[in-house]
Image (cartoon, rainbow, N blue to C red; front, top):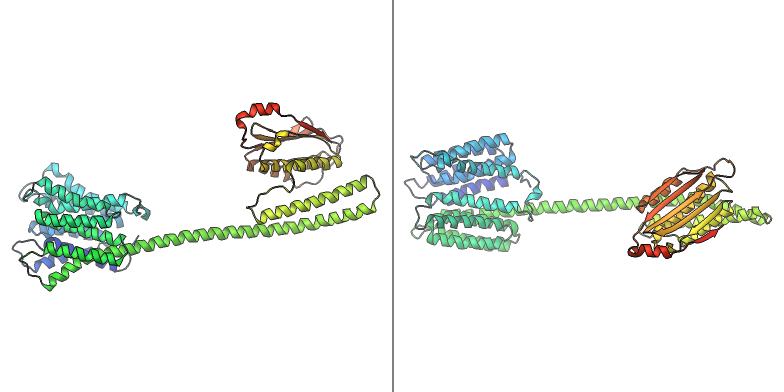
Length: 545
């Protein structure tokens, strides 16, 4: 998610200034009071430019860190934190070359800040400044990945929040761990716990705000050195709460509570409450809420856009499907009109000729043409219904066994010598497999009549065994040579496609002067556990035409 416009830059600048006022406003020393807001502007205002020029801002803050550390200004802590932010922005917005330059400057500045005054920085301590400067760059480079990585189910943003919280807590308090009234490990554990609590702020925002509030009051009472750092952690939790909770009522409740806690912690008993201090305190607490609500609104807008894109894709797919169905129906109507016209004319002429012709073979052939034409028209209407509504079952109008028997009888009447063998166990096979087998037998017999001619002996066998429906159409050598009838060349391809659709196989080729067509259609058999015994008890019925 990229933020656009001037508002994010203003929020960043105000946040930087407010952070230094919060961390440096209570620092003592011989400085004039007017220097506090001046240093706050010097260290915080450049954050308004960090999105456009992150590397120059990082180098500037590294130099300011060295300067404020040398003069003993408490602003050095703010400069240290904001420099890490600028390094992370450089890693996110720029390449590795710019990031390494800023990391190098940040490492040097951090080393000078960590080293005690008057003591040389030992070679064993090199890990700390390098790690502090390098970690934000790695985080920035990671965030250049897909925006989906920051979605709620991901744990990476939670780890980043926890790591950032611990880093801020340690950087803000480490120099006081050995100077407080409590042992160093108590102070360290206290502030590290406050930082780690931010790791669950996205999932439990209200609970984390409550925990940070309790820790802030405890630190104010027992560990004053950690008060400012835990105040920062509380403001971070408030910002995450505002991002995750869209209700302005609850954001107002959290704002009032955070402002009250800040007033208790920031304003000491001997401090005079001035309008300027009140305004600064209210701005400091309002800044994370404003940033959180802005980020939450942008996140909601991005999610709405993703939903809109997904819905548009779904509608586009539905429209494409509707267009495809409309095109299929149009083609079906055209096929029906063309074929029905010619077949209907053929049936009418055959019917007229049947009444005019005397009894005999000619009359029988005309009657067969009439019946075949009627069957073609019925099948064509069924196919048209399937094309109009693909969800309907593409079942035959008649039982598949009857269709096979009728096809064998028709081809016998046309001159073929058909030997039909049907396995009584065919009923175990699914209807879709038996229907495809019937169509394959029809096409196979038609091919024999076209290419071998009348008088050719054909054996048709259908058997169900071992979870497979086996179809065989085998014809012998043609009795005489003849020119084959016209063919579209799509019959074998159509049969192979039918077999492939059911996961079966088709083989076809010469066989002893004739032709053999074999198709195997697998199906799940409910009696597969007793296939052997069932098969041994089946018998075959032979029908010779």
